[in-house]
Image 1 (cartoon, rainbow, N blue to C red):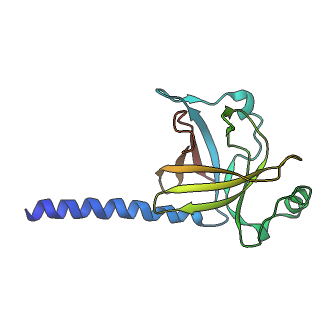
Image 2: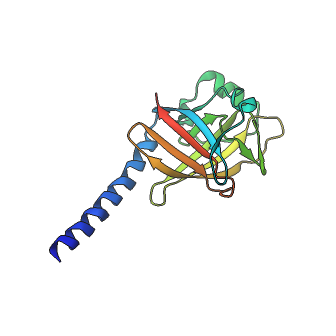
Length: 169
């Protein structure tokens, strides 16, 4: 009985310690490259190269809005996007899903919230286009998390099973 109890406690400890590593994604300035994008219901297929090859910002690099470069701040001034100086933001273009369509949608800036309790990353994304006024919320579930890489999938569209695989630079 003592061995079974010890085994159960050790499994609980290891599962809790795995959840605590989610905090490593909150560290600002750590850059991850999007290594691959796959989707499919039964078997995962690589995303279409017609829009993957157009991506220029295939990174996951969190920073404060006050730390944006001068070029990024100048570009944001062209749009009606309101960011506070202490907002955690991400500039990217690797999200292939929007309004029920899989395609390349261009550059996006997003406010990022990471909830390590349920391993959910929420993006409040603003497309850098003239018609953008409001944000579009998108949720991603952290599927796997290791020391140098992680996999997230689109929680808003689970029937498509869109997975994004990131590796640390």
